[in-house]
Image (tube, rainbow, N blue to C red; front, top):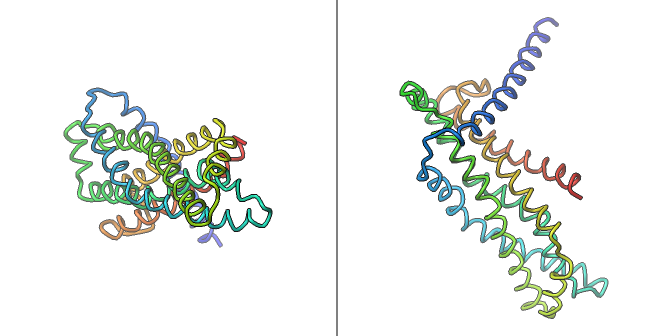
Length: 262
């Protein structure tokens, strides 16, 4: 009995320490954004890695998502004789919900996992310790550019996702299924308002912060993770956990933000 309580207490203390470390990590990362010297190249490099290199997967995910929405929306609306509302249905679904969520999930899978593995390998190979020995702040040098690039890249990728997805719905609904092009665009124009766009923007900003926070912190503290060995096994396990936690956090905060902003 006492052994069980001891294990439970140790697990609880470890989780509390993990939450505290993550909070301190986030504060140090934001403080690193304001510490000189300010260098543009690390930020542009992360913009390229997180944003530019994700456009390909975002494009194809958005295209086929919009096409599926066009098919499903047409099938549902045709039962009520409301095929002209297909444009508004596709646009609202993408802008308010699917765009921010699927963009964040794709960035997590492509860039978030890479960031976690990169920082984790730097930790186990003692490169981060070497930076500290040379009086180089690892938060400012490694983490802060990723945070800034991720927070700025996610809304831009979200806008690309929305535009491509709407065009995918147009290709299926108008070109394949015969919906009037004017009805498609007019329905979208009359139904989409600034509140819908702002909701998607806020979600993408929050999701960008969550993804970068979880993935970088998991890699940074890979040596303190008790679930796996220290080395390649620990990095692989932390990368897997980072992707899962980022995805679950995105879905959880999607519901919370929707409940708050509606």
